[in-house]
Length: 104
Image 1 (tube, rainbow, N blue to C red):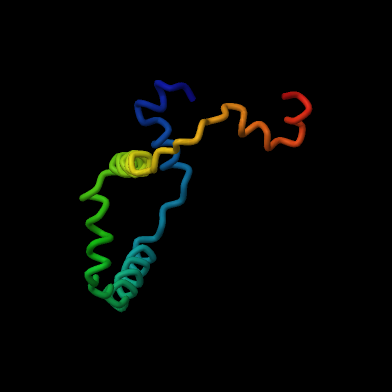
Image 2 (image 1 turned 30 degrees about the vertical axis):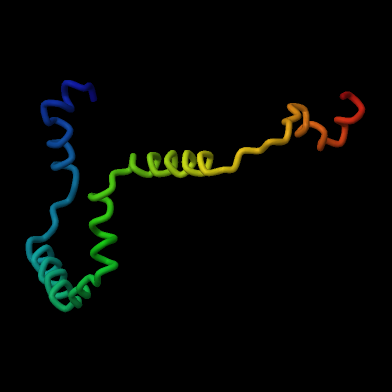
């Protein structure tokens, strides 16, 4: 089928002709059974304070705030870190490698 046939409803008409129609009484019985099952289902328990907070939290704090909080945490950690007075060896981390002593 071409796109023009699909857009004008030919596919839907062909499917309606090819698929069997359900019996109206069977559909009514199914709907009644579903309604009974829903009516017998217990109501959900009311939310406690923590549940209400969990439900409201996504609307109170958008997703981008997590990245902002992480950046703020890193800035505080770096800002409050004591300054070292020892000279920094730029090749120091390389000396811990097993072959570093041979090449440096």
